[in-house]
Every structure is written in C-alpha cells, then in structure tokens.
Length: 135
Image (cartoon, rainbow, N blue to C red; front, side):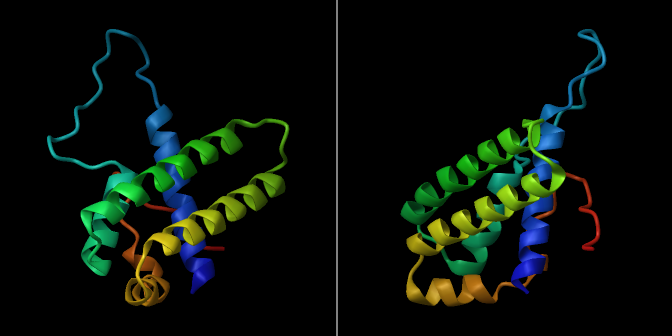
C-alpha cells in the first residue's frame, strides 16, 4: 500500500515538474491557457487531503510549503546529471518519506490514521496526464 502511494506521489511530482518545465516552441506561439480556477498538483493534493482529512486552515498553511519544498527538491534531483537513475530514485524515495513524516507531524492522531489508510487512488490527477503504471 505504501509502495503504491510512493509510486503515485513520485509520478505526480515528476509529471508536475515536466509539465511546469515545458516551454512554447517559439516566443510567438501561444500556450493554451488553463481554465480559471484550475489547480496545480500541490493544490490538487492539498484539496484531496483537506477533503479526506478535514484539515484546518492552519494545517493547510503548514502542509503547502512542505509539498512545495518537496517539489523543488525533486526538480533538483531530476536535473542533477551526476546521479544515476537508481540514485535519483533513492533520493526521490527519501524525499517522499521525509515529506510523509513532516505531513504526519502536522496532523492530529485521527487524521494520521486516515492519512495512513488512504489508498493510492486518492492522489489527485496530474494536470491532465496519466502516471505510468506501477512496475
């Protein structure tokens, strides 16, 4: 169960990085605009967590920077050409575990139980892209 969550969250984060880094082919080419009110991967995940766990505004304010920091660190890992694919995967697993621990630290005991029991399909969709199937 945790492995599936790890795989899906990692996919979510990596695809968010990829879609955020896509540039238009030329400066004159327009990018399709997102509908107003559309959410980023971090915001989507926060929305799911809030709905499933009943997060307070204070908890949301504490968890959002945790997720944003994870995304920033994953972007750095992805760009680090000195790392092998296995090393990158190890670092991503480590970042995921650190993030889970930090999020759990913000939750109440009841919320932690719900968080730990959340199935992997509770992760939000990734901005129109489907994650690869688990290996």
